[in-house]
Image (tube, rainbow, N blue to C red; front, side, top):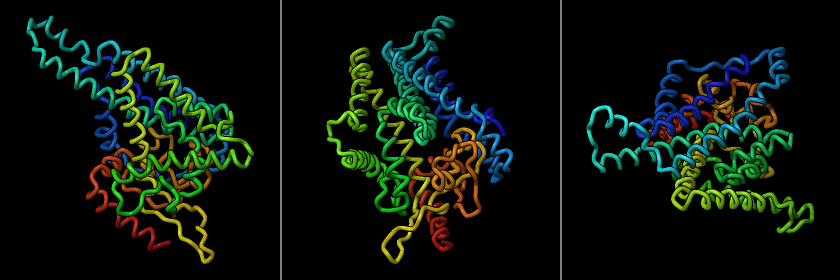
Length: 371
């Protein structure tokens, strides 16, 4: 159990970069890797509910390597995003495959085939950037925005900038963690709610919630909307400047496709939100107040592969109990409701609502029965 356990997570941006560089059908390496290969391996390997003993936990807490691993992802994500934008502005992701094959064989390809390969490369590369930035990028950002260090919080915000989702730093920490498992929480999926309906509801509601949270904070400090202390206002300015640079240097089409990759990225984040709390509700007491957040208000997964790739995010029950607990020492407890498999497999399941309901609704009922 060491920091090296989490290095496989970096194979995802590496796969995305390799696919973008090679172009054509190679750009689909990342989607296939994440949503076919990893779920298969996860199903074969299974889970491990064991926790650190006291000595191991203290060692893990003291090791700076776990933090350094998170910090290192910031330049990696910016490099991957830069590669995507650069390749796209230079003509796309058709790659050297067609030209090289033609030179070697003398076979000329029609414009239609070349155009098809270009389109396939574009779709695959956009998916790959969305998966990497939305999967690993959001996971690392999520860990960093929970840290007490302002430096680390801003590293998390820097990652969120690349997906145009900086408001997540406010809403998640001060909104979701406070209201999880209630109707007030935009990021808690209701039982019987499809992922697609959840996505349409959750994204704008979380954005509005972030403005509301920031407005209340400013009101407490007796500061106005146009104050330099208004983080939400600052986020909009930073994101507009970021987009202006991309549109200005690389053109309208590149900018629009980049925004599409961001939509894919935060949709992947919302798929994770969907499965983490689906159908789990906090009860109200006789004074009409919600019960305290407990381990049975979040779905847990001890599947080893997801834990390695997502920095223990799947041990989500313990994260909601102690949000400041660093990822390497998150625990699995017996009372936490368990997902049938890891996150990539559950995301695939969520894309097919009838199958999702068939698997998850009985598990939700079982949790409520034992509360």
